[in-house]
Length: 302
Ligand code: FJE
Ligand code: FE
Image (cartoon, rainbow, N blue to C red; front, side):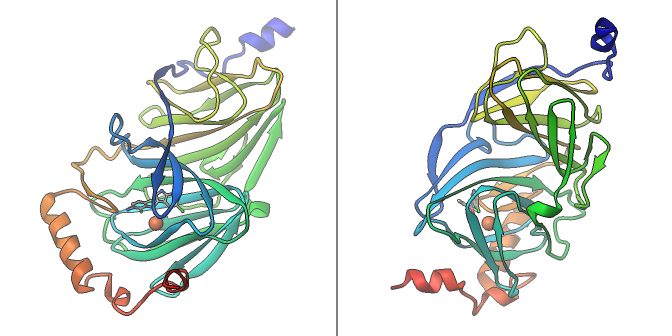
């Protein structure tokens, strides 16, 4: 009976880990610290993912007024809280377990600053937009922790940020088809999670130690990024005595040319030149940035 359960494989071709990176702390923004795994020199782009930062910020540090164009940012809080303000008058605070899915599209200028004492921690993922969506109207989707879809089964807990797992779906609309799952496995738990075959997918470990891809592989600890090879899903084992927490993110590759200049991500150099021009002249989506400064930026002047 037990053997039968073990051999009952949901997956035909489990994906193996093909690359592993440790994300070390570095300085970003104003006095903020990030562990950057995607978007660093050795891994500039993992189509459609541009950046993955695990951030750690203690006031007065943060990410003061800055622009974005051509992609989406997903901010998922792990500890503390962050306030976001933009030049369109949108303002909001997200706390532990909450998420903000921001589609910058043609242009956003905003600030992202700590909203509490102590250290704020979270993840920020940048997802590229296809050429036909780069200039869409900006849009926000915010979900509070209590409204994040969750499922629990066989020692596995999943918080479904985007996509579907254990029969539970997220309400988030993803322009670029994406899955974003926050898993916690109890000691002894074994997970089989389907992933669309043509998608790129990665794991980022947050807590504990896990065996990923192959039951015989060596364990991976926190702050490591694992890129997965081809296949129809992922197998994970928690053979340790502590809980294992990680995110599994997958997305459909766009397969388009990419030209990036900091927070502007387009397809050609001409489009980047145009974007810098638009930003400097407050046009084509940056109109409201002309006379705008965030409240947090005003207070930085004292
Ligand atoms: C940015 C440098 C930056 N990672 N994680 C340059 F730091 C940023 C930026 C962020 C950021 C913000 C949060 Cl809340 C979390 C982050 C980088 O804002 F956009 C550019 N261009
Ligand atoms: Fe930003």
